[in-house]
Image (cartoon, rainbow, N blue to C red):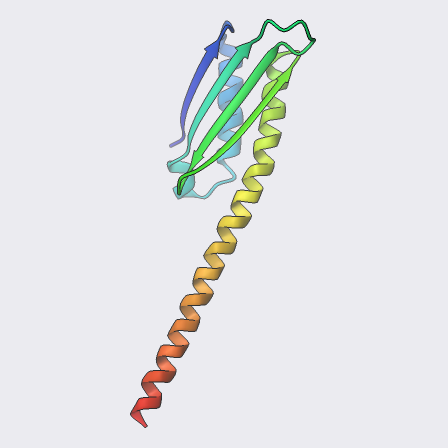
Length: 129
């Protein structure tokens, strides 16, 4: 089960923004395996800044993944939903990199175990003869 914490700082959090942020996190969570999805913790911070620039809404999402991995994306836009869309696409790219790294490490562990087994078998059977 994905744990989602949504905070607002200077932004009137309405149901639409909250549901939209939750849907983005759930969408990102679908790209993970069961173990990663069950231990996923997302912290969403929505801010309304008082800048004089056009981008006054800021969204930040922190994803905590096993083992001790954190992915962070932050973006400003003219409206909150657009900022959440951009943050979601940034996290999607980061998740792909994370999964690639995670799977490569998994393959390396598997190959090293197979090599150790082969060496152990060779040493064991070499001594028997």
